[in-house]
Length: 275
Image 1 (spheres, rainbow, N blue to C red):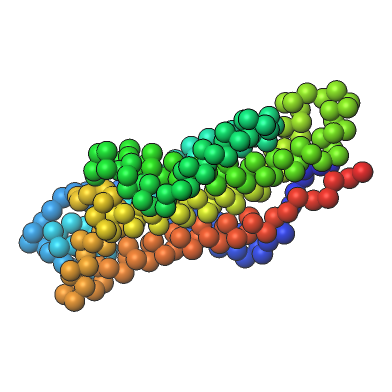
Image 2 (image 1 turned 90 degrees about the horizontal axis):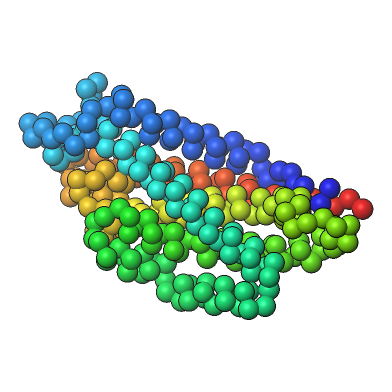
């Protein structure tokens, strides 16, 4: 059947990617239950080494490092999922509309995408974030504004190829409607492409959020976010080097897991349609 597909990527990449993401998700969900309040300060316990009471030690304000790390992971994962979901919905809808209608609709959507991509992604996020510095929603809106273009481009190209193929032409001659063609031809062909782009978009979102926090233009202290944590802990790297390792490892593992998943998903290909 046209549009069916199967895994052709390395199984180990799928297993490691999914396993690491699940481990981080469980840690993010259970962290607030297992750890202390990440906002509570105890200046008598500043920069403590890991112990039974504070599993990852305490930061320069005596806050529990484990709790702050789990809250940062939950923030990064939730923002990545939310931004990718909204960007995928907008980009897919516009890509399908442009591919289906063609003509002026295709030209309008392409010019809109070109206008968005004329600015570097981080600069565009910074411009949107300048509306309300330190707030959450401008970062979310800016990331969605950057991500939807990639979804639009891949969906438009893939959908145009599918709609111009013999299976879709045969379905139209047999009298099948647009909804049937979308469900049985277009959506199955787009599934691996969208999943790959979603994993890449999530990795991009996590790294962009941390980068903005690290340079001081993203979320602001006392927010528990990986980039903000690195900024706060960097001056203490001589006195307490163990404090920098957990957020660095969490950021690296989260990025690697998403990239492994994207690589495995990208190895999927549509199977040849049966005659």
